[in-house]
Image 1 (cartoon, one colour):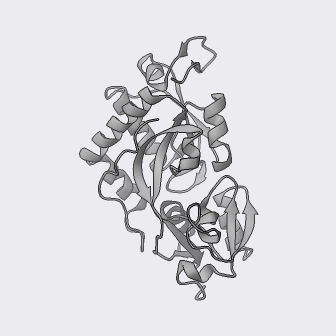
Image 2 (spheres, one colour):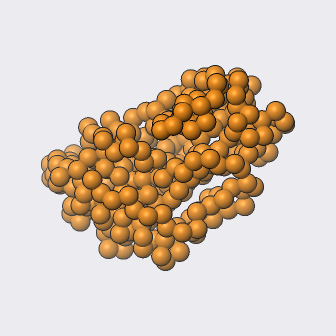
Length: 272
């Protein structure tokens, strides 16, 4: 059982789990991306996007239909596990793919949606038409993300085992900047992430629409918080059953060419 979640705002009350914190009226610190349009992008005082809306909806369900006080915290790919482990955040909704390696460090609720790794290139580029065309090309390696391994490594961690050159970047927004500046040939990661950037760029990029993996987006929790994990899984199922998830997917990603959105609830992974 996770322990020692401290109430925000300087309060001294502590809660054994995030579910207890919600029930006790505490402010929940939610980690999201702040640099990914469509998923989590900082706009004014708060981030906005699909992950942000899912976080609000899931926590509200866990709280019996009542809104939860939320403090938003930027959680980049490189700091998601440390933030959960050291209590910087209570829970994470941040395009957080469930992997066996990560399961050893955190507990995952969900998944709440399944994305698929795809490839984004400059709109005028005719040399890359399939993921296999990345052989010999420069691709982005965002800190803390496993996406590049799907291209460069063999299974089980990788997928295509291609000889591509990786270019380091702090996050995917920097990857996109490098692609704009021709320092890269392609950015490859989850199709929902790429779709948000492509939509923002208004024609400057194209997504191939050839997803080749299943990326199960999970809800990150401190390792051992099974009570909250089970509560968010119940909430996710209800949000799929009542149509909320489909509405949110359509709101943020509807009409993007080549993008195939989930239409049914993915099976829960089970809490551990």
